[in-house]
Image (cartoon, rainbow, N blue to C red; front, side, top):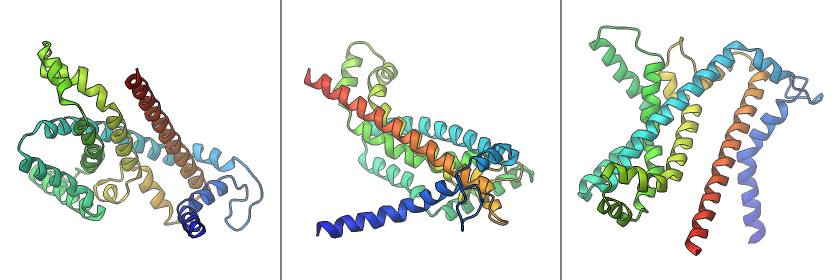
Amino acid sequence: MKFLSKFYMFIIFALLYAPILVLIVFSFNDAGSLSEFSGISLKWYGELFRDEAAITALKNSLILAVLSSVIATVIATFGALGLHHMRNRYVKGAIKSVTNVPMMNPDIVTGVSMMLLFVAVASLISTKDIFGFGTMLIAHTTFNLPYALLSILPRFNSLDKSLSEAAQDLGATPAKAFFSVELPEIVPGIVSGLMMSFTMSLDDFVISHFVSSPNFQTLPLYVYNQTVHNVKFSMYALCALIVATILAILLVVNFAGSASNKKKSKRGAI
């Protein structure tokens, strides 16, 4: 049984990570071919940084991901605060259910509905040029919100309510009690929600496809347009850099979280 379980795990991890490893290995292939490996070279990385369209698309994706994740995390933080202090459990449950709808919806449904909404708004304000950075920012913030809320709300639920009440008894206003007592305790959840929102926005293609314009193209849209022709090997280099960046971010977040937990455990022991 142990052998079968290990073999099963090996197959699962191979299916998950073998394509990524192949992509990274061939991003260093000097021959620029998937059929032969002639030697290790950084040629495609150099070509990537000379591709102005790819660099522009990368900048657009990073700007969009940073702004949408920050806005979604801020809204989710105060939304989680409101849900945490809400007393009517029926209304609270209904709001939670409605908030989770965007996560349950297929991306294509969300993308089409957002597109129709923006088209309706464009007809109301009598304009045809509505799609672009603004519509993509609204769409990305919208689908990031549930993921950020899902990361932050459990942190609020694990808080000791007596801490905030004690701060207010000592003269602090509710706002000051939140920023001084509650906020430091939920920072790991905020960081987790921010990172998840950032990666979701950076990765999104389907929703972006429906609310984008030719004037503002994100990296997934640029890569998709490359597949219409022969995919350049500089795209392999680009994807390898994205994988390495996301892996580094995840390692930093995990190490920071474990370091924070160790400090808390030491304080508790003292």
